[in-house]
Length: 263
Image (cartoon, rainbow, N blue to C red; front, side):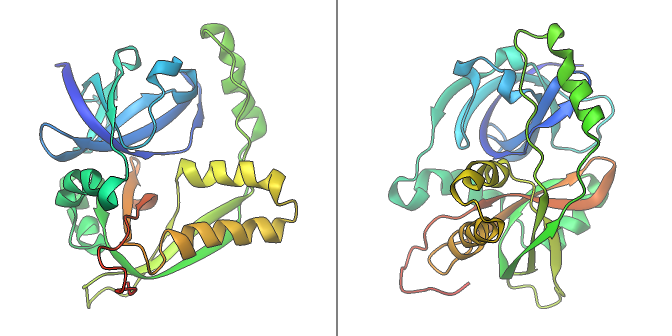
């Protein structure tokens, strides 16, 4: 299988998962700057990377990667983590202008259209939602023995990771597609590392669970999807279940005209 050197703007970092092979892995995704198309990078054991390779979102990185043998999704690539190099980082100056120049040309007309394109193995995208709602649901914890077994493989690695704390809730966006009259609505789980880390950090600050969940809602609905933001959702699907998509992140530059506070 041919190895390619890719230059990628990272826009998505999914939460880490325990891994039998890698102790723990993340799936990251972004835009291939040579083609302008979406690309998925896996596996990336982010917390095991050397500090100088631990890239924040909206970093431009270069990395050696190749097409996987089993995953047929057109955006998927396996990466050589040792070849990761951080080249630069795009900030939020001028109302996110540098980020928008790269991200918005990949915009899909709607999530409905992304679902249609599953037949050609499309599995990543960005679109504009409207009528956004935020929901919280108590989740069933994963088997702790299986999770711990993955982390007990530390003797194969340079360092041992502390098992990442499970979140006892799942979070969802319910929405309609913008400018899509035939859209009845969609409800997708949010699978975003920033949200899960916010829960872990804030639970020490907001000891009452109801207050903590209210703060999560305020951030991911009232702020990121609020009237001052030009809100878009990043989505990706599950390899084994191609029609099962999740919201992997939110792109939320400020609106160009601050008086237009409508979705």
